[in-house]
Image (cartoon, rainbow, N blue to C red; front, side, top):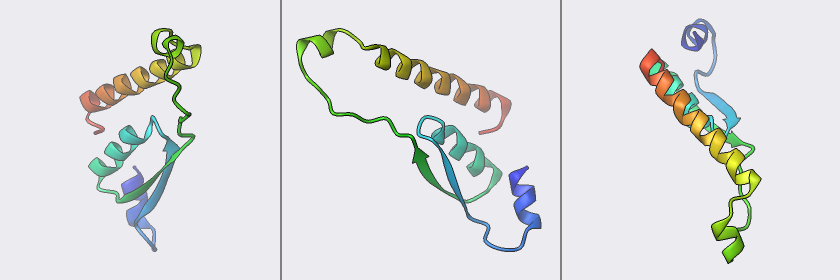
Length: 87
């Protein structure tokens, strides 16, 4: 759809893709399959200072569990897109 729209427009055919860091690989794969050249920018990256002590190494935080849930959802989404032929 996007490649068809871009082919009808005059002007640059390169895009800047801005999406969440987790969603970026799936989005890039879709645009690559469609033949659309994009530069990517990951919004809302998740990074923090690592703390190495027994408590943080043995007990997951609620934030970590939420991050894993998001990551697994993106993996499932990528596989679903692959089966559907989007990537």
